[in-house]
Image (cartoon, rainbow, N blue to C red; front, top):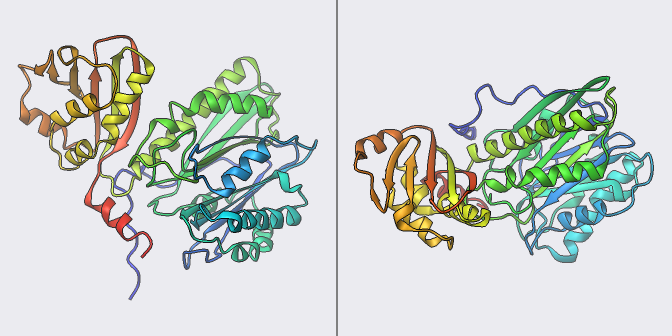
Length: 415
């Protein structure tokens, strides 16, 4: 009997995977290697032109995978002038918590790509995503490197987006075009992520490519300035992965002049937009998600307090299950605020569902009606707003509901 197709999240962007622009100097390929999955692409390769600059952000998990440590080490090395770069990614096995065996697997995979593309091994970056604690069958990947190299094409980014998926129900992509001095600049990004989402300096797996002429140091600063309010402002289940990685690569192949001045500001704004779009797509594909929830916190004494309250609400199983059940149980929000560790005053709090004032001044708002709250909770996209009434600090984060489907997916993940 044919296997039933995985249902696509009801929150997925309409129209499917977007048409992404070609990034000159970046070629993609994807193949079936059978790392864990049968009859689907599960390894992808990106080849990047000589002169490409690379920036990155990664999980700060103390049990991070060997490929993460390898990428971090390589980004700190001097770059031979005029060299290209490559990224190879497998799904189905995270190669995390696999000790020296895992390190040898990383070396074997990156070494194979380096040899095939004529690159220093220091310029080959790898990522792995999937089950933790199982040795990576790296020979299945290295055996496919010749096929990957032969299939490289600038138009194949959509295949790469599919190959990195695990429990995702749809591939994720976003793009932008920036008017540069003397030409246009293209940016395109792909991501995977659905569960184990509570990033710490990066998220899931994200790869963003541009043909801009821009130094690695500038790319790194832009990435660090924008990761906090995008990828570090989402949560599906409060669990930070061992394998979160974000690589941002600039091939320098655009006809436009090097990025600076007003163009740099426009470029960074476009980059931020792509990062935000990809981050939101990850939440929309949260395992079993049926609701996309924005949590807005204002009036905190400090930014740290605002963040604590926002994430306490967004990560609360009681809040998330109430949202799943379309229950306007605002008492659970009160409890989440109280447990956050942030400074709060009961008599200054205001809680809203969208524009509906639910509670203020230490009590339920006189005009609030439960029927209004229940009607609001039926929407697919919700805003939970809290004003602490103590200061000017604020924070917005995004999450999804917690449904029975999440439990089903994770109870059977290795089955």
